[in-house]
Amino acid sequence: VIVDTDTGVTLDQCQILSRKIADLFFQKEVFGDGYYRLEVMSPGVNKNLEAPYEFKRSIGKMLKVKFQENDQVHSATGTLVQFENDAIILQVGDQEKVIGLIDLKETKIKLKW
Figure 1 (tube, rainbow, N blue to C red):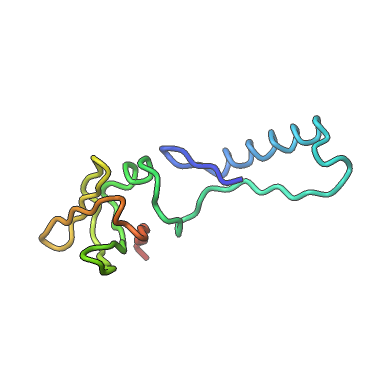
Figure 2 (spheres, one colour):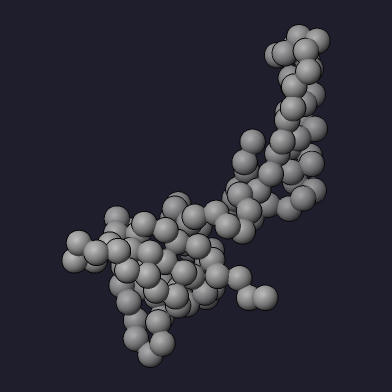
């Protein structure tokens, strides 16, 4: 089970959800006496951004994007300045790049190490 919210998910929240789901499985005898494995987790740092809330909470973060433009796939790295009207505005150097969500092929947060 992958769980996410507008503000992210803590380890404690994952543990609580895991216990509640496991209790429900036990009460309803979903798997009888058989073995099952339940994993509850957040999407992780390498997840591709897709949902509007993921872009909204990533404003101000550095993104690495691949996008379609003029029948070619390009890539850019920059700071997400804004998200609205089904497009992102990425600050790349001294220029702002507007990219429609429909043109995005891959969008990941670039971590600082």
